[in-house]
Image (cartoon, rainbow, N blue to C red; front, side):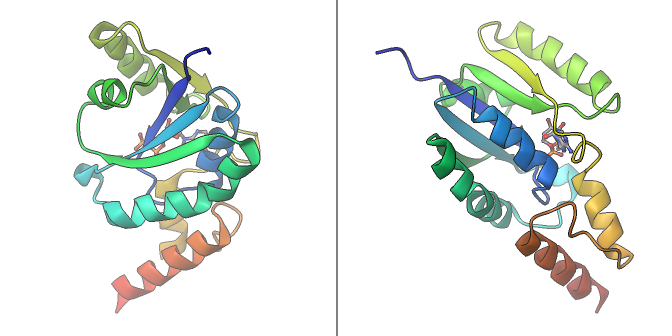
Length: 170
Ligand code: ADP
C-alpha cells in the first residue's frame, strides 16, 4: 500500500473564515490526512484563546472531513512550522494565497522553509473568488463597528465574534 500522504495547513484561525474553509475543502482533495495546525501567535493578540480556536476549527471542519472521507486532525502548535511539520510526518504544507497581498511574505517564508527542510513541499491554493478577500483581521474589525459578518464566517462563528466584541465593550 502506498504511503499515506499527510498535509498540514497552518494558521492562526482567529477566527476561522469561509476563506480558510474553502482552502481546507480543496486541500482535502490532495491528501489522505490533513493536520490543521493552530498557531499560538501571541504577537497577534488573538480574540479567541488557543483552545477556543482549536475547538471551533474542529467543529467547523467535522462534516467536511466526513464528506471527503479524509481524516482531519486539529492540533495547536507553538514551534517552528518545519519542526511541527516534521513531527507530524507531513509531506506537504498547504497555504492559501490571497491576491498579491500574501505573496511577498509567502515567497520569503517558503524559500526559507525549503532551506530548512527541502523534502517538504509547500503548495499554494487559491480560494473561490467569492472568498478571496476575506481576512480574519477584517472580520473582527467589521464586527467591532457593528457591521454584518455573516457572509464571511460560518453562522456560529459570527455569533461568537459578535458576543466577544460586545463583552469587550462593557
Ligand atoms: P496567518 O496568521 O499565517 O496569516 P491565517 O489564519 O490568517 O494565518 O491564514 C492561514 C492561511 O490561510 C494562510 O495561508 C492564509 O494566506 C490563508 N488564507 C486566509 N484567508 C484566506 C482567503 N480568504 N483565501 C485564501 N487563503 C486564505
